[in-house]
Length: 296
Image 1: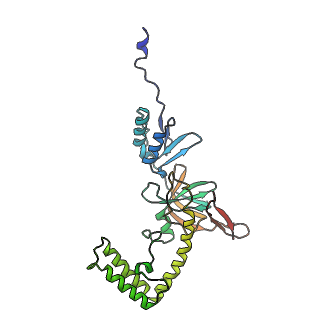
Image 2: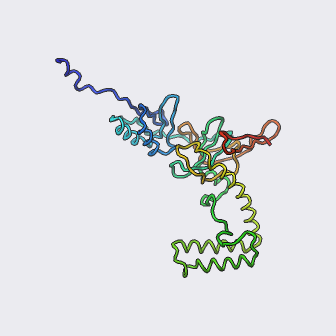
Image 3: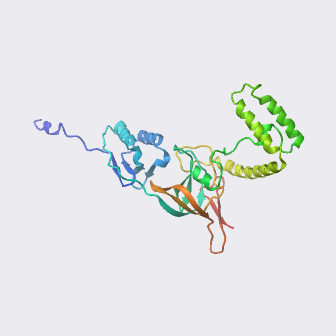
């Protein structure tokens, strides 16, 4: 009893830690399901990565305060954050042999992104705007929506006179002086724009050709809608942008982060060619666990 005072002010050692490897914070804690759930909810997917071999989380330094708060909440520990000042990843130029690029998805960041498969790892991150810029696709364009024919309430086989009649009917119903729907103005503009395109034979022919191509792409996207989310922690509908090319030797500019490479700009995109001069074509069939590769 006389020796009890020796132990009264002795605090047990922390069981949690936040270290720094020069690029990322390293979070080490005992397994706590609540902490893991909160970490995933508060930190975007692209800003964290679980390393199963060493059982730690790699997290971008910007989320240090969040890690402190989680440790305090679930383990009642106060941990100090390492000094990360003055550390900034440098831009690099890399060439990757990308075997497949997925659809862009919302991962909790500012914009949707797609991962590229290199070897056996999904380790190259393509923001949607980067892909759209390379392929000259309008970043503001929806992935799918009503066709111009649907806007006018007309069939694809409609004659010029039928198109004019449909336009007049729809314009009359949706004129801002008549309709009180909250989106009347936008719909009226869409109606006028649709007719301006479809009423000119040359523009209509180009639009019809585009519809046929889009139908092929949509069929492919629909087949993939039932696949489980490969790269994020939640299942979501496929609504993002799809790169017209799925694979290739891709020269990019960007930064390494969390064991991945985050692309800021695509500089070049060449086919992967084998010794026989054949080009690699990859695709992902419904139910498959990996892409199928063919040389053509």
